[in-house]
Image 1: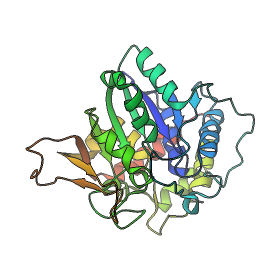
Image 2: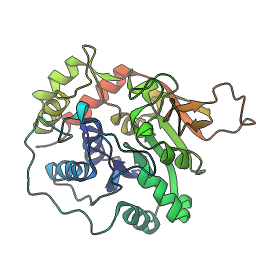
Image 3: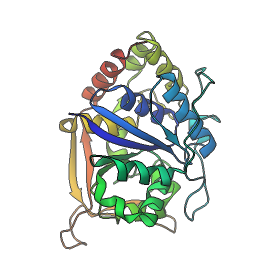
Length: 304
C-alpha cells in the first residue's frame, strides 16, 4: 500500500534529498510538488524542484508558490544553501515547465480531485498551506495529515528561539497549527540527532549517479559539522516509512508571531494550558543509526 503525498518545499539541499526519497521509494506516491520562498527565492526553489524531477525523469508536476511570507519580511538561507540553493552538481537544463497555475490553485485541484486523502509534507515555510486553508477551507476534510519539517521544543537554528521554516513565516505556521488538521511536527529535536555521518556521505559518492549527486550537494552544505550533516527535511519521509524509529509525544503547539521570540514553537509539554487538548504529534527522539542505514539503502536502490 502506498502513501499518497504532496510536497510543499523550498529546495535547498536537504529538500532535494527529501524529494529524491519521495520520488524513488515505491511506497510513496508523490502526486505534486509545490514551491515556496525559503532557503532561496521562489524562482530558484521552483527551478531546483524541477531539477530534481528532471534528474530522475519523474512524471511529477511542479507548481510555483508564494514569493514572500504573509506579513513578515522575507529572509533567505543562501548563506547555508548557496546562492542557487543546490550548488555542487551540474543538473540538466532542459527542465519541464511548471504548471500554469499557482501552488495554491494546484494544491486545491490535486487534493479535491484525489480519490484518496492526501498527506501534505511541507519542508519549507508554510505560506502556501496557510493561503490554501484561508481560500479553500474545504480541502481540510481531504487531508489525512500534515507531516511538517519545522519547529523546535528547545533552541532554534535561525534565532535562539526559532527554527528556520517557522521563523520564515510564523503567521502561516500559526494558521496551520490552528487548522484542526492532524499534524506531525518533525523539528530540530530529532533532525539535529539524525545527522548523515561523514562515513555515510563518503559511501554515497561511489554508489550510483543519484548518490554522487547527493554527495556533491550535501558536501556544499554550509551548516555541516564534524559529526555530520543535518538532513532536516528527509526526516519527514523517514517518518512516513518508519514511524517506529521516531518517538512522538502529543501536545499543543503555539507559534509566536512577534517580538524577540518570533517564530518559536512553544509546546505545552506539561499539558497545563489547553485543558488537555493537543494539536500535534511532536517528534522528540529518533534512531539515528537506523536513519543513516535507511538513507543509504534508499539511494543504493535507485537505478541510473
